[in-house]
Length: 207
Image (cartoon, rainbow, N blue to C red; front, side, top):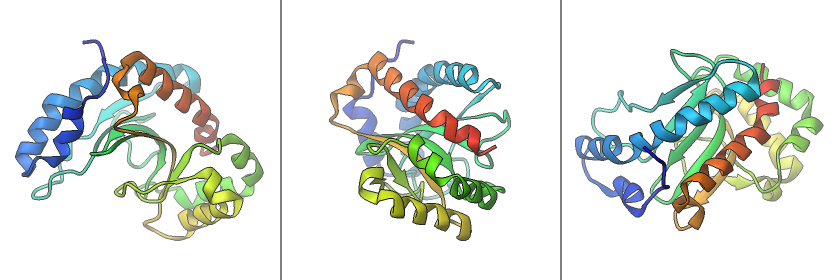
């Protein structure tokens, strides 16, 4: 299957009422696209990182009532799971696509990782382009640009990630659903690869 991009129908998936109905649409519309682009992205990251990486596609298995507001693929060095490890994500909300390097609250070493980022803060600042965005909670759509946050805001985000048990740190890019890039499959994949390439040094710093 060739990836031709995301469509209005993909984003409309998140307007479907009911857990079973929305999950069926996610499985039919979005997950095949994740499978198509995910393996290539996984192979590319394996080469860049020098370590075998594994593709995971969100199953939303814990949900029993509320339908998911977003869905994603994740790429991690662990074959069995990704949430307890630094990982890369591509995912879809109803109004945008996100491309993240994600450090989420399940990460057992998150305080240690945050402390290392803060100890090498000037290097971290150089690694993250100003047009990238930061999120402190993967469940929310909100993200702030690095340019808008400034050094002080970025430092505060990392301190919160270190000190607050449920705090998270996600860095990457958002693409609005009406951006023509999303309709051009090859161009979108190149965009994701370029984003991940930029973030690989930060990923490696976490280890």
